[in-house]
Length: 455
Ligand SMILES: [Zn+2]
Image (tube, rainbow, N blue to C red; front, side, top):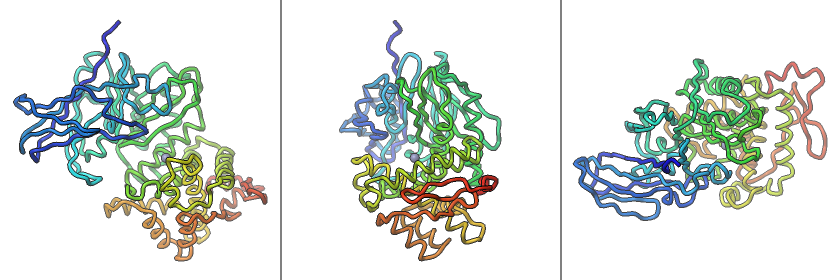
């Protein structure tokens, strides 16, 4: 038997004060991230030991200003088969074949203040011993053994790090530069099949935001369970994806919808930086609009059919209409998002119906504006003002692009919990809303040639 693998982490910073604090985050359902960290010690550049004090998920080090201080520790996963269980999937994994962790939980980033954001700075990342052992390495910022990035600490740890038997594939497509990092042999599809979905989706989403962002790293790992788990999360410059394990075909159109949804968060979350103070109160926008655009982007990318589009939209209409909490105010989503499964789904369903209503309103005004212009302006504003979005700022921008009356109508839905009414011609001339109990979209006679411009 080979010895149990160990990953040592060394974090060196230039101390500004006589006291440094490092910490991990309870992120992605992980409780007690400190349990994943072992043998913490610290030293200065002359290798003199520094005193470390530990409390919860913080470690503090006494040093002196101007000193280069290094924190050393080992990753000690408490659930080495974390990917065997959906709720455990973000725990660090260290096995003799591969390594997978999220920066939040496994990289003890310096804590400078109680502020949510710290300034961008140069960060150097060096992987040692992995290539020598025949392991590939990759993270959200690239696949080199040594790399330099300019990020805030928050954005640096909002990232995925993998090594081992992951295969690395690159597209040479200027519209969709992707670095695909996937574990081999687990699926009945290969990188080529995977990229035949990912490339058009990524290209369409960039077109939507007219953004030539940095290459997108997609890490794909098999869940070690037999369930049809397909799930992902948008991180800095990367999507960390979990797919069903061996013996299954690529789950299209689910993969196209998932990638479209997650990559939308690159703009509605990472660029627009919703205020953390609002918590789940902004999710009608961040999650709801991602749900709306998962269909639109996947359809424009040619990865779902117009039948799929209406099928998934009608399913959302039905879920919204049947939800016992569909008239709950936004305040209830803030307080009970993590407590009630139905409240948890509400911002996704309410938000995507609201997105549809806004798109219809903008189109009906006849000024050639659509929801695309709205989300693009929000992204451009966030970039130029450096101010993150709130529910109020999104509504205000909507009022500027439509009218005070329409802004008030949408506010009553997303803030007060009034039921959204979809105009029957919201997708005309492609499809029309039909039926009385829960109206559903049906293709209009002779309307299908108009779908490409409408959906
Ligand atoms: Zn999402």
